[in-house]
Image (cartoon, rainbow, N blue to C red; front, side):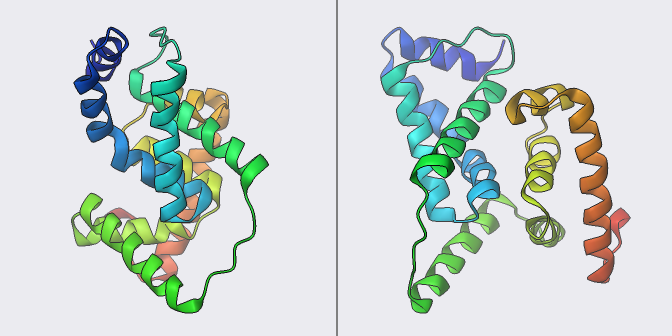
Amino acid sequence: MDTGANYYWRFLDGDVESLTLIVKEYKDGLILYINSYVNNIYLAEDLMQETFFKLVTKKPRFKGKSSFKTWLYAIARNVTIDYLRHDSKVSLSPVEDMESYIKDEENLERLYINNESKIILHKAIATLKAEYRQVLWLVYFENFSNDQAALVMNKSKRQIENLLFRAKQSLKSVLNTEGLSYEEL
């Protein structure tokens, strides 16, 4: 059985410590997944917190139709899309602050993606269209199946397969322009 689901059900039964275990297990991956939508690591952290806040306050029912991780990522996606629809505002930040934001984002990436080839790959993925980044992240970094990725992204399995194909072709093109071989990674 899915440990995330067990923790969530324990949380619903009153075990507050199990929520801490859920947050520890999924927070980093959620931040980077949400960042593929918003392209702002601080906003991604806020939206990750909003996702967990929604679990605590709304206590949505987990029916077990998918893995807990798939269900949680779908909630994060919905929280992010709601933010982008309703709350996103153009914010002007001083250039000096942008350097700090970039450094913090790179530090988080380095903690989560630990070897050099994965960092190169991650930077190449960051240049792709948002939909391509999301599908590649879910399938290759979070090890979601195509069915699970389809649930999170609200697409059909066939659409996910097509997106993956186009995303890999686009990634191969980016890596080739950087002088790297797709097969080396």
